[in-house]
Every structure is written in C-alpha cells, then in structure tokens.
Image (cartoon, rainbow, N blue to C red):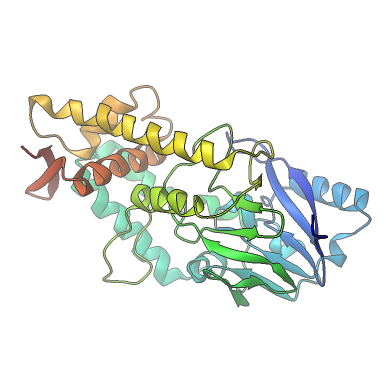
Length: 321
C-alpha cells in the first residue's frame, strides 16, 4: 500500500451531553492540525492536554484547527489553543464561530414561526429563549479558511473535503483516496444514526433546508467513495461503511412508512405527529424530536405520499390519494 504522508491520531474528550465522549483527530503532516476541538469545559481541556502530551505535543504546538461542523462539542476549545494561525471549515459555520447576532435573531424567529406552523402548544415557547445556550460550551473566533466540496485541507493535500449536510448545514467530512480513510465528524456513526437537525436558511429569504433529505443525499453520495475505514466524531472507528449506509437509508424509509400510517384517520400537524412518534422523549428532547418528525414529513411530502394545506398559521399534512 502507498505510504501516507500524514499520520492520524485519535484523541477522546468528555462532553456533558448524552452522546458521551467526542473524538478529535491530530493530523501530523506539513502542519500540525487538529480536526475538531471538543467542548469548552475544564475536563475536556485537561483531557486534551494529557493526550497531546502522550503524542509528544503541547497545545502550543497546534498550528491549525479544521472543523467538521459548528456544534459546540466539536469546536469548543478553539479559542484555548494559543498558536493556531488557521481555522478552517465550511462557509456556513462562520456565523456560529463569529457570533453573528443578525443570524441569531433570524435563528430565533425561524423557530418561532416553525412552532406556529407545527401547532406547538404555548408551554414550549419558553424554549426559544434557550436556543443560544449551547454557545456557552463553544468558542468564538474567526473562520480564516473556507472548505467546500473538492477542496483540500491546508497543509494536508491527501485529504479532500466532502460536503455532507444534514446533521448540520455546515457539515463537511474528509476523504483520503490512497487508503480509503474517511474523517466523518457526526455524519456517519456506527452505534447510532445522526439526527438531521432543523436550521434556518443561511441567507435571509431562502427556502428552509430539508435536513433529512440532505442527510439521505449525503449518505448516498458516500456510496461513490471507496471508504475503507471511518474515523467518526463519536463511537468506535469502523469499516464496512457502505453496508451501514444502506441499512441507515432503509431504516429511515421504514420509519417514514410508520409515520404515514398515522394519517389514516385524517390530517395532522407536525406536533401531533411528534407526540405519537416520540411519546417518551418529546418532553425531554423537544428540539431533537421535532427535527426528526419534520424530517420524516419532509421526506413523505418529497416522495409524494403526503400533501399539505394550511389552517390559519398551522401546516397540516394529509395522505395524497
């Protein structure tokens, strides 16, 4: 096999989230680069310092950070690395890293309108004031390098960027053709399926993203790559990526079929569907369950199995006969 110029080392950091530990990856090549940067907690920082030392480095040695996406468990420690001269990521990561207040106002307004459209009861509306809370575990900084489809990681020309939106609009992954290595962030995880998460459009006036449709397209896209080993953001490093992708795509169709049966007695709004789909989790994981529900409805609408109409501000879905 061809000798690779870059070596990759996995570093595992704790998070305060239910998903558990997050992996970041040290790329040794023309630049010492960290792929993702954990969550901004003392425990994560101490774990990073310790594991960097085991690799023969200190935080001062990191020259570049590359971010797979904007979620706080992936970019929290960027601002703690003193000698980083380059922070690279997708252009849609910029408002999150640079704390664009205009974007966040649109973000809150988007979800307010989505709640109305979905028939969400008033008891959930206080959650809108907590949309920015995860930022306390994230970093503030500047995006200095934009990475999009086909671009290479600066200083690591073996690694090509693959845009993989769905879990996040800013999500990118990295592929090395020589050995089929794939650094996948949260796009492809072995133990669990990533949540396609609702987000507002990046530009004002654009149509909102359909994250489940994007996620499926991003998964199907990966079937065109000869992926031999996946370095994920969570869980174990694994192989057999194509088989996993096919299972995930099939399971999503099966869930959509389950959702479709809910409409046998007439039209429903998204909140009513969510209550039936996630009766045990809607209270504790409202944002995640609503994202998943609207994703399923987007899929059924996209495939022509559901139609929509409005009753006042609320969007209703019904079977397309």
